[in-house]
Length: 289
Length: 223
Image (cartoon, rainbow over all chains, first blue to last red; front, side, top):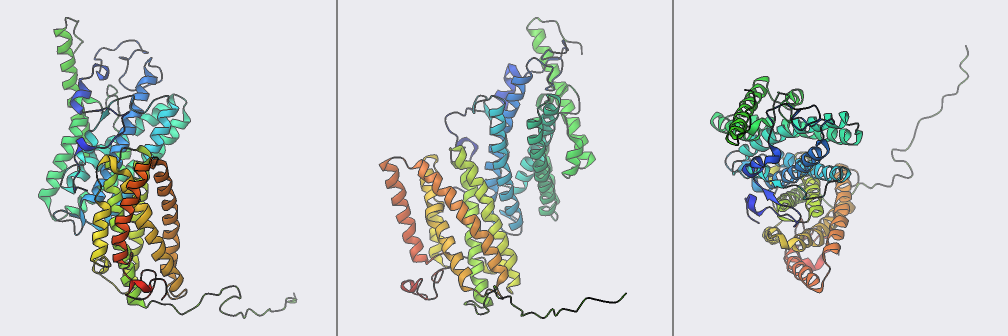
């Protein structure tokens, strides 16, 4: 078995179709609507609320995205447990206890796949019904374990905190205690994983500020990727809210959360501007700025 | 008020009649530490391999089981890691070593299959060769060590053996569901024979003496 495993070789059965971030965001079905329409329309809010006509489909799509994300998180944690020798954390080594944490995370993610598969079935979704974006595993492919901690545990698992909070709220609003119950359990695990990333990142780079700075920079790149189009942010316009309290529990400082919110806001504005330009080009009446 | 109660004696034997634990054991502290170090090394190699394989298997149920079992073996390694300082080894890494070079060769051969169509080979190596060897070595250790002086090792082995037996059953059931043609049977048997040969040369998880006392494999199990 190779020491590092490339994203294009991820093993899947024939039901799964893979895509990447650029293709996914170019999909017109994921576009945000800058114009506010009636309360029940897709454009009334970018958040998934039970009032929306497309609430069921949107929730199913998000749940499928969560499931494939969990599969990749399981694969990523497994690879980090495998790819690096136990050592003092310098060079290509990681502390023995960090390997143990990665194995623990693999088990947690395996349970999350089980939970998401059962929830998807409960919501009427077939495995492979939606395309799989492989960006999460890509962030777990770095040959520096500290970058994996920053990109996966802090940026992407941080996003999972936001997504699970959103789905839990949706479950409560929609009167689906089954969904809210499961999301609450997964949320507890994700906070643990993010905290694991925060703690190990600080510990491993304690005497190497340059390496820490590089890792935090990588985390921002991944965070920015997921801010694409403002898909996640403090604003009600963003489909996924920023779960500040849970992020705080997971070891994020207020400044770090504010920075993510700022990036999300900028990305949202950029995307809205792009949508307006596209509408103008198509001859539609432009949305108010 | 007059005390009407009589004082009953609380004198009892140190061991209750049903407690038949015995003091003598087959392993001294150094030998126990050596074996525990070998166990830790092998459990580490196993959890690393299972973690690495998760991304390489297309079968979703197998993928999830490998992730779950990866943690079981990591926890076993952690238990042994914590036991070593209690056995006078203050640098656990020093004893975290393979029993011999043949064990290294075995792990390399077991971890070799990577292609997505080799799930049978992956599972055979773990669930039909390595885990049965863990069950054997742990059972031998539990049944031969001092039930009183080495109680902490026995306690850990109890928890670990439960996992090994459960995982062994899980793995065997996955294999039986995957082996459905004569070609599959041949692949499984060939791979098992190849790995088993290396393991016989290695002598088991703790080397020759894993389930016996001599260096000579012919005395295995006989003492």
